[in-house]
Image (cartoon, rainbow, N blue to C red; front, side):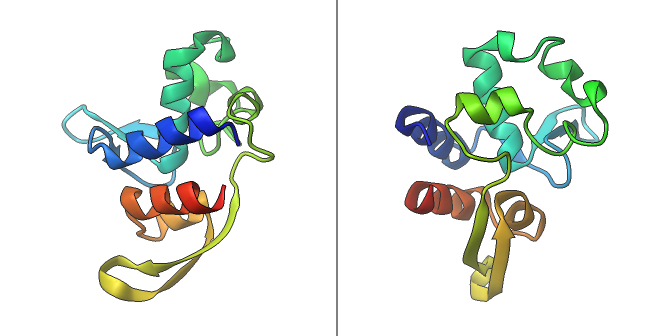
Length: 127
């Protein structure tokens, strides 16, 4: 993975500037604010740096291919980031509050309750 993009992604996840959600890259919460999964944060960074990666814009990505791009970064994003696949893993972390181990890809960790901080640590140490 590109070291500069990796550092920016880790910092963004730890910043507190992104509200964590599950099952989609990005969606609106009940108050109209945006919530992101960990991979959605990477997409947001990519869009800010390289809006041309998204032919129809970040807001329209979900509509391009409902089967994949709603859940995972489009190929242009993960290749831009220097990743070998759109949802890397198999990571093991302790669950929230020191609970049982959570195992899976980044999106699975996100959806099973790992915090952005925990996911950022996995990215920092293992990607």
